[in-house]
Image 1: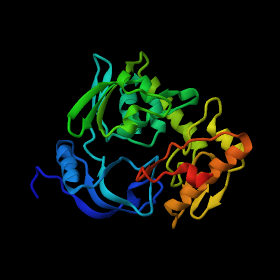
Image 2: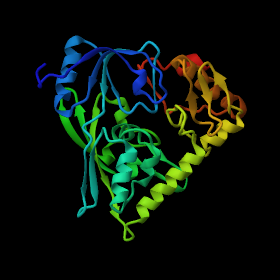
Image 3: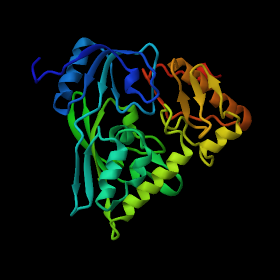
Length: 306
């Protein structure tokens, strides 16, 4: 095949690309390469099929029926470039957030240590304004300077952070037909160059103690409603240990769902709906998921949960 044309594969199982280990088959699949992205999008347009972005596979639930279109898998092409003089780091969207945190902390730069706690990629993190709370508080909007997007029909466009309309686990990119290619972040050289790595290590130790990292999970399931830490809310709603099919609410953290062999996406949908229902019964609060479903159009929450 020509090096100027993307190599599109057919009927590729997607479960191996998700941290839950569930999901059907992609009708078409393409492993991302930045220079070929416009060609891949043009191909999907000519074939009249939808396309969707898949990163590291955390925080996403692929339907048992799969995706009847093109899955663009944002892996590889990992680039990190630190400008020591200016205090910035540029990286490709495919870079895992923990890798970016480690790369900057090892060189004595502070600001991104909190990224070590998030299993996804930088691109996905920018789109959803990923972040962590507690003592290691931080999110994308607090550190992003600008992002590079590919907009079909337009091309590559750089947008400043203030134009992203960031909110809690939200950016305008979630509603746009664009693809995050890279980002530039603000970092600060610390006088004691060992401190950033020390903080990062402490964060990882705390995370290991409080989250089921040895299990198949997708990370946090629900967003925290205003004024209510979601873990405590779910725990007091009695969801700990709840099991439906191959999906189970973790004993370690009630906002994490673990999967076992044979689990179906439909099991996860059912248990998420039950967690949401029990929380409403106990507190009268409707909690919203962080998890994104593929295809996105098949997320009928009100119909399924009420």
